[in-house]
Image (cartoon, rainbow, N blue to C red; front, side, top):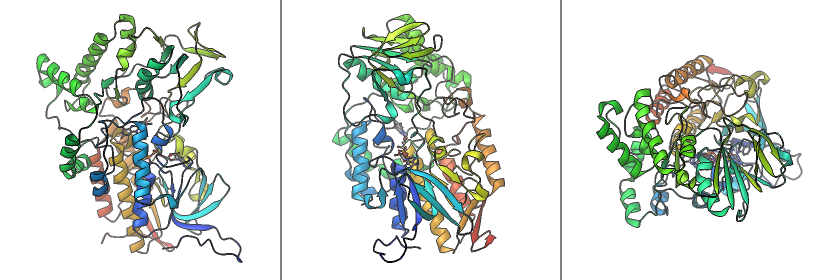
Length: 556
Ligand SMILES: Cc1cc2nc3c(=O)[nH]c(=O)nc-3n(C[C@H](O)[C@H](O)[C@H](O)COP(=O)(O)OP(=O)(O)OC[C@H]3O[C@@H](n4cnc5c(N)ncnc54)[C@H](O)[C@@H]3O)c2cc1C
């Protein structure tokens, strides 16, 4: 394959730098993609708009930020040495520790030399005559690459709410998804938090301890399960490590969501009320996301789902002393689990503190931000600082910010105007040699994302290796295969309760965004098998071109 650019060419005019692969983003996806491709002898350049590696964990430094999949599982599995040597300190590691881990990975595998930091990819255009991509970056440089891999992240485009007067607010405004690097001290301040999704649920208890007063502006109450976070003992880590190969295999091949846990063998309505209640109690005490896997039909059967939702609503009512506040905090407009379920440490109990107020902005919408207050329902809530926990333009937001032009000059934004369309979540017809990691149409945000990232990286690396071995130059999703996949993703989603929620899975948090269910809900094990079968059949559903001639190849 082509070699990395020489830096010593002096007398000739500067030729555009050429790489086999340009990777956009240096979060967990971009880092592993670089490592994997480099190991196969490809020349790779990674561009990252942030100042360092880590992606999500570089940007989301808000108080209380931590993972919600247990760290022993929310970690790479591609290197046994790495998973045996890294010591996670807590059941759910805090953001600084996850960022340290990302840095450790970058150093251990010597990745930094191929990453350009503080460099945003602004444009990528496919040159049909050269069968390569021209990639333009924010420093006005242009490079060419045979392949482009978008490792741009599903939750990397922080959503700024469009509220009248926000720019005139006199105090500091923070977004949880783009938090300053220096510690923020809210001591003595009146703080307003807008939004009550996962980031708010993690940060509210910590901010409440510091602030003089905290006002939480809630539009939608969310279901949250206690994390039961605790320090991990050396024995617990060791027990995990000893069975790591089985845990990782199960997470990849059998679990629906990429998390090792017991597989439920019965539905919620098959148990009597007492039995059901004691099972929910046991999961509530254990804490964590596996609450939802106590029964096998909570995602598909509304009556079954109601039993779990009622259980959690009752817990909220038990915890929150003021009945009116408790009622407001009880989610009542979506099935439990149909929006990403949250994991908390004392979120609901925080509303018993005298310095915390909950404001219902569904009934009393925010009208305006004043220089020192938030006006909602005709009432002014005075605040010195504002925390916007308003989430992300999920799954497509960061891709849409890049001007991507495929065949015939069509932009990806034009093609996706009515919602993202992909084949397997990996490629979009008309955009040859352009891969997306954990893109719409793949399990992605419904899973332990490191499991899904590793699966995509391995598949892409195998695919481009196979292309090289067969002397092929261009790979492109067939329109027909894509249409069938889009229909399948949609059909599977509609066999579940997920589309009943106005969630960011549907794009419902972004005004004007087309509402279609974006991730593939069939489960990571099933999905992996589909992708493997496609590859085994000579990349069925893709057209491959050698030199000028399109041809289908048989797998060897
Ligand atoms: C607070 C929070 C907690 C989370 N907890 C969990 C969890 O417990 N379990 C789980 O499975 N998932 C969790 N997630 C999801 C998380 O995003 C993924 O687990 C994972 O970190 C994604 O890695 P990534 O490399 O795909 O994307 P990211 O980590 O988002 O990295 C993408 C990178 O691409 C860069 N980028 C984007 N566009 C461009 C461009 N045009 N040019 C250059 N660079 C660009 C971004 O700056 C970013 O650094 C969480 C997300 C958040 C926000």
